[in-house]
Image (tube, rainbow, N blue to C red):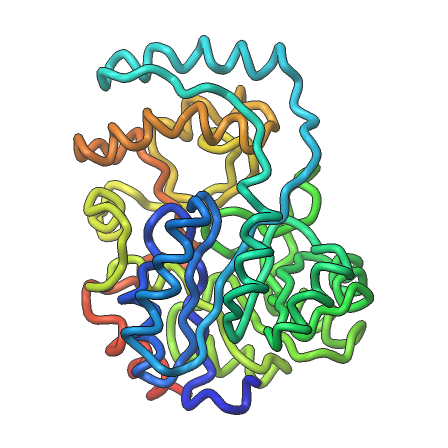
Amino acid sequence: MWDSLDVPVVAAPMAGGASTPELVAAVNSAGGLGFLAGGYLPVAALTEQIARVRTLTDRPFGVNLFVPDADTADPSAIDAYRQRLRAEAERLGVEPGEPRWDDDEYPVKLAALFANPVPVVSFTFGCPAPADIATLHRADSHVVVTVTTVEEAREAVDAGADTLCVQGAEAGGHQGSFQDTYERTTPLSELLAEVRRAVGVPLIAAGGLSDGAAVRRVLCGGAAAAQLGTAFLRTTESGASQTHKDALADPRFTRTAVTRAFSGRRARGLVNRFLTEHDGIAPSGYPRVHHMTAPIRAAAARAGDAGTLHLWAGACYAGAADRPAAEVVAGLAEGL
């Protein structure tokens, strides 16, 4: 699978709009592997995006899904946080969203991918059931599971995963761990070596990779390919908001941190006002907190309010450039 890529680079699936069919096709045209992000998308919208990709490229591509977790949120903590966010919402002329739990249409999306197979299906936030992986195998899909520990790696291989995406602590956006009980702090280089010793399937390395030298290091460390997300956020084909794109190059933002403030699940982003003010209070409670802050974040993006928006970014975000995605892939290839 991974030997067939001209350039061993995967464009990470970035839910919320950043990963577009155009970005997938551009990465594919440059010799890498593009991914659609199925998270948050209604199944009808995901189906439309898959169809659009197929009109833009005849090369293999992937679709990522979020594995739903049990609803373990503390209702009183969720309610208290919603009250806290009212001032943020009022300032932007909106109301906090309903703090609901849902499964992100996970079973329906699985059924759609079985009926309309894609070359690669990856999973984040958990390990799919062995039966689900077997179903995708019957559809000839290659299955990738995102892991953040050796224990998760072994569980995923036992469930039937063909490849593991090994996500180090430096990664931007949500931590792909099966449990959100504590912050993952193992750097990619260390985690990649540990997982390589523990399992025998191909590995994709992810987390804080921004240039060809970094990609070369993980390939030398045993990875079959490198996955980059933040490096593609500012590209022409990215669907990230302009506010988000501009913030990645704004000298006001000098570091990243992991927070639950925006979604109720740990994720790495640029440290801004919202993160600073709410990080210590935000409860664990994905996707309830995600739905609650969604109208606030959408209004902040429209208003160009980078201090309130979730600014997902990996530790090496400064390398993200405003240029076509194919040029990003070509630049990475030059450094190999």
